[in-house]
Image 1: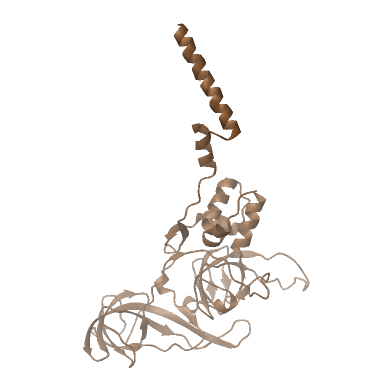
Image 2: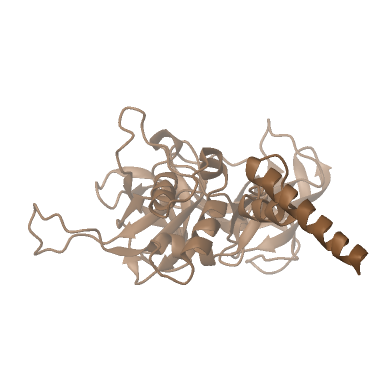
Length: 338
């Protein structure tokens, strides 16, 4: 019994000694270490994006071109009695001199609109290029004349349709903020929808839209825009009412002068000429992190805004006081970005 009491006293003394060292910062007990690891878990290095493959076929987007597109060649014949061609048909493609190709190469069959008038200014501004399908070269029957198979069909094709080399596009979109002009970084980008896929005039959710601005104006793949309603006819000219949000457009591809977007949500149909307002994700997320007294990592804000959004959503919980754009983004399917 005496020995038993001595053991208890020794354990108690050892415990008090460890506690004393812990308070002084010399030794940490195991429970404290585990709590610290949970509270300061390192951020994941895996970047995530929005997967748009459920909403549109990125290989069939088409694009807006400010100039006439020069094709690499054309469909010149086919092995069917039908005038209109589709997936599974065999065709012959004649390539223009100066363009090299080989069996196995993929080409996109396309069609071009006539030059379009700008919905706001009325000036000529470009051509809508519509993708009709995709072919694979099978064999070269004579110099620059290839036998090919139609492996993908979005629209009916026919002899005479031009072709371009196939350019694959990833459906995984990493969110980024627009890059405004350095001379005026506070300026909010506002641009109109100038055309839509298939030259549709009435636009709704999951429509593909085209913009006549691109990298030169600070627009890049992964930018998010808010669709804003036009002012009402009876609204005073000096009114300062907030914009009425109709939905959101995600930019899927951008070039120097034009860009292509997907309407990821729309509360109502809208029309060519409707304005889009750029959302500065980095600034908006920084403000929200400050509001909720959360850590703001500049690298994370720049490279993985969806991860920041996930942390915010976890912090806010079921309360619906996040902006509509962020609530929408939190619901969209994710994908890993290499």
